[in-house]
Length: 81
Image (cartoon, rainbow, N blue to C red; front, side, top):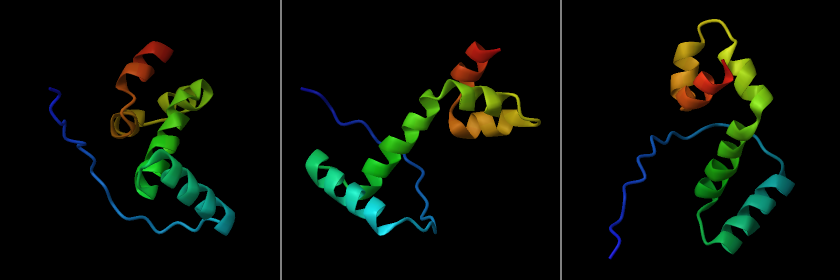
């Protein structure tokens, strides 16, 4: 038997504007994946962390330690240096 693990998501509502097309894509994909729209967006946006050039840019910013920690990039930041 596998026990449930807490999601540990510190969520906050955001006030972004996205196109109708994007909303429909998210809505349909969430239905397909049997997830909520919020979970779907959250998972997809985390894929940005696979962009090596972005990670390098973040880790090279001034006062980046706070940013790196908030983005959960400690391991990736260490590897890029």
